[in-house]
Length: 251
Image (cartoon, rainbow, N blue to C red; front, side, top):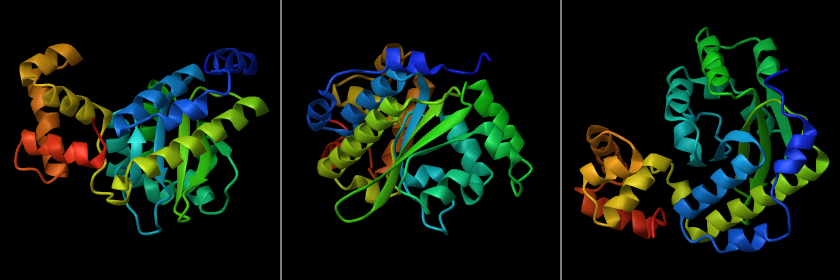
């Protein structure tokens, strides 16, 4: 099948060597962690990743639980707009196990109880090349539970890949706890684009210049910066940059 990634492809593409622990330990900001996770995601043949806390039973939005993610914004918005968190098989299993597991779209479609709009979201996932999610549960020294999720093509990951991804998940999450406790303020979860715009703003670039660098319109850049300023409770971009630095989003 075209949407299947063979096990030998995974073994060939995955990063090798025991240096990942040292590389993760050297991450200094959330943006460093995003870049590392993007490289890892691509190296293993996945399309996207999400690192999020295991939501409470009364939680309603995935966006508020996310720590780091490069999941397309339209997917997150659609997911939250139809309250799929309450119907998530993955989240339910995360509350029951600390062992890595995977779920396919086929598995999810077979289950009952989904809202009618779920089929639209599933179609969007397929359009983005996401047919499977691999969950790697993690926790910090305080016992707070979270998960690292890699999403992409359908594949039966070999045990060596599963073990390496689990170790990467543990080290990345522990490093994030060392960088700062910003994820516990779930109202302050910044997207990759928002962090990029903040970084270039901190470098002295104008909205027009940032638009040219990132391949966006100036209007879109302004939207990201205005949105992130509200998230950080900042009165302007300058204050947003300062607050983002203090929280470890940018260096």
